Image (cartoon, rainbow, N blue to C red; front, top):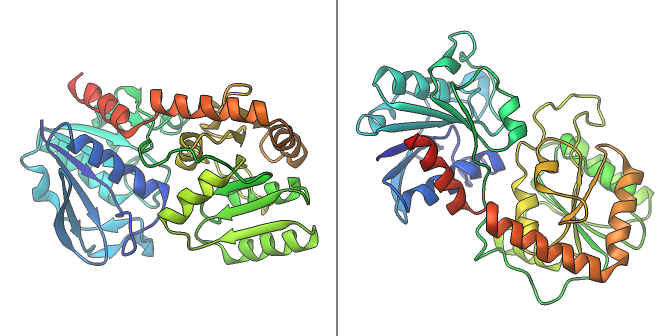
Length: 356
């Protein structure tokens, strides 16, 4: 069957760099190895090219809805769906996804939605487009609960990691604690720094999307006398090296950030958590979003209450102090990823849903 995936923003330098953009690209590449697949997306430089088996079509938006780069508006891509049997839209709360759902249904295609938590102003609820969707293919069981009105069926497909690239290293750096994610308040890096101890070697990796919050993190590290290194422009190779050097990975995301803002869609999946696990690094995650679906205490890491720096500190210190347990949990973490969380397995779950 021919599949068209529609993503509102392309993952890359002239698009957007984030998990919500990376997910559709990686899924489309994995699907393309199994069935003819086109990825339609939007970027400042329009072009068409092949990425392995994947046909990529990038369009320049006519405009951005309310100026938001992750919510482009254009109809120029609609001919791409004509020869497809399946239209799979990403980011339900965007104009592009709404148009994909409407066009797919009106053209008699099978229509699916996967939501990665992004978007902005849209017309989906007003037009009741959720009822036009054959199935919501959710990236976690938690994600499935965030759009109850979307899809006549719910299926959890999760997401994946390239386990041939994300591999363990022979040795790690003692007491190195790694956290990866966009520098935004809901990522909870302030909780990590309030938990951190002077003997920890903390590395935080991510693009700065909130300069005030980043300044606060730098000040907090200085005030507490911590050893903290911020990597705000690490490329893929540098990030991989940091994963491989870490003794423990932390994912301290919160539902309510330090400014009091609610974040109901925090960590719909957590790809960076899976990447750390693939590198055989045990994870200490907060009890937020999908993270408890991925991290199991005593099996591949530990889970601490969201926003609780003392619980986070205790969980990390336990792992840093016990080499045997840390190595066992890290090996389990990689085995879990290989069994459940590869892009190939995710693509197979997608195809099963398309064929149902």
